[in-house]
Figure 1 (cartoon, one colour):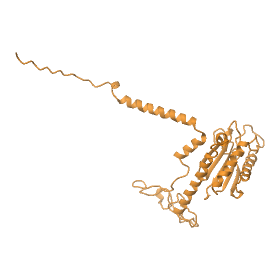
Figure 2 (spheres, helix red, strand yellow; figure 1 turned 180 degrees about the vertical axis):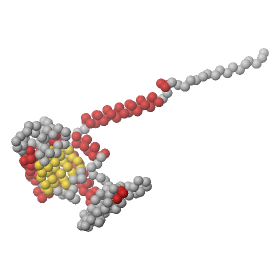
Figure 3 (spheres, helix red, strand yellow; figure 1 turned 60 degrees about the vertical axis):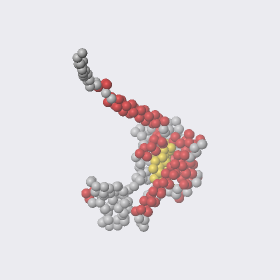
Figure 4 (cartoon, one colour; figure 1 turned 90 degrees about the horizontal axis):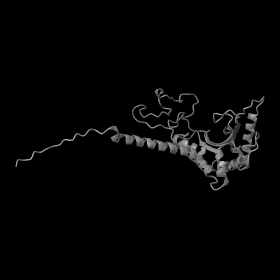
Length: 286
């Protein structure tokens, strides 16, 4: 017998079609992840209060800087700080050292460079950090006050706090079904009394001066003599009296102001949300 011939079969394998590849799986996974993040965000917005959302926003975009100096490296600024008195004109800032009567400056003190007399930059920064920490402690005490009491469940929905360059702002605002004052008067509702008493108590944790400001929602009906300024002033004075009645030293009150309807916080100037009281624990350098 002769040798059997060797037969080699060559199978031609064509490239997989688009739907047989794996690229679509990656795109689909990204889509599902994005949708999950979106629905999680919507759920969180619905499940959190305005106060909690304000705290989250302040965490990611703080209104008070942690450090007044900018880090440096090569390239654009060549290591210069954008917030220093010693930068050249090309950097966009200048020095006030040549101005007659200028306050002594320190290069690490921010855009102005000014420090309290007799206090160097490091000491002033330490004092500022300590004060911010103290105000944060007041804020945390306020938000956690009465965790087992009626206040946290019913009254705290009227409260929003934020830490700004001016100090710790504690804002009490009216709700459509729950005003802070009786009608167009300066007579506080029970919830307002409870909140002011609570604020007076936690304010004892610090010695900062206090400012009281009252705002009103705009009236839809024009009047010959709208009593908005007198009414807002009366409410601010009434809140100051309540704070003092509940233990706040009257010497700590720096100003009491009625703004009427001139500073709305929402687009609709007549919305109840604009009817509010702001109690501010002022920074000591103001």
